[in-house]
Image 1 (cartoon, rainbow, N blue to C red):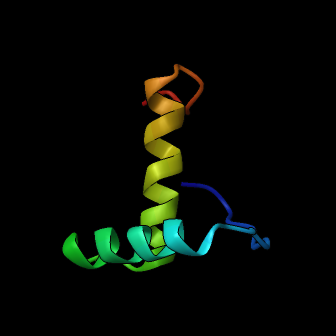
Image 2: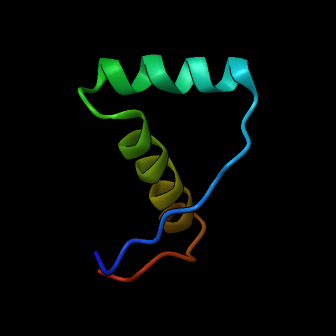
Length: 51
């Protein structure tokens, strides 16, 4: 993965709680889980970086 850039994201409190639990279940940080979700969505839609 290339250089990472920090940015602010607004997210619904209940959605964040769900993501935090999912992250804990998979032994990831919340940030890592959000990054994983975005990468998966990009790959599934054909818009992600090609392997």
